[in-house]
Figure 1 (tube, rainbow, N blue to C red):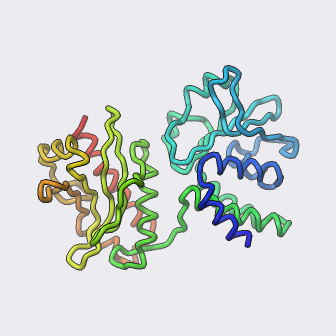
Figure 2: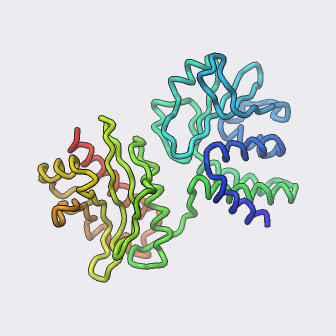
Figure 3: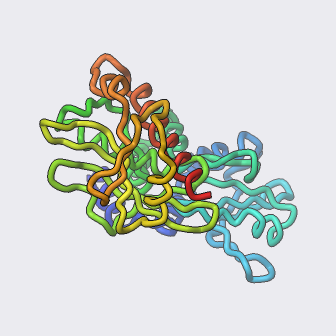
Length: 315
């Protein structure tokens, strides 16, 4: 019942504030969870975690900023900012409005650690960390509640269980979609986001649309997925002309040659521009003996190489 409760909760309450509220409630009611969460963010630096009182939505003195969590310990102020997909990091803003504070940042994607906060974590890493810590908790009810929270966290943050897949098997489509969504949301420069306003699954092809924003703040709409017809089961990224006229024309005029992971791109009926994965990499994606991590790496490299190519074309 507890597991199902949290799974349904993640379907109805899946926004950043919802996750922050649930985490705050758990920190307020479970000393074990509070200790695991705070030590995961900041390390083992606190003497008396049971004395720490976490505030929710702490407003700066100038009323210009609102951070998700705040607490005091050992004459220091600590802040934690939670992000789900949102790439507005508030870095300069928080450093200015919360001087002399230790700031932790946790999100469901990875960021470039060289330019952000000292304490950078991901919800996926916390998920796996909490999994191991639950095992050593004595209280059975607390164990069950925290195990339920893991299901909530998995749903809200799109955390996927590692499960191998082959692109030529229909049973792998669920895992495949989880993989491409994770790749899009994990783009290292934060320039790509899922675009849910367009239908990504159509006859003969299964995938998703996503947005790409270049340095000029121009937004393009691309498709990432596979064709599922008997005559074509390749992995593609496509640029639809009527949505991306500038990018489409730039790619056409650039006469792009094959890359490390993709064949020479081609135009289809003056309506789509396609990047197609090379056959030797496709064979590896369809090979059951290749482990999940290697297949993920292939798809991630394929994606990032094409994103770089597109960005270079519209500089």
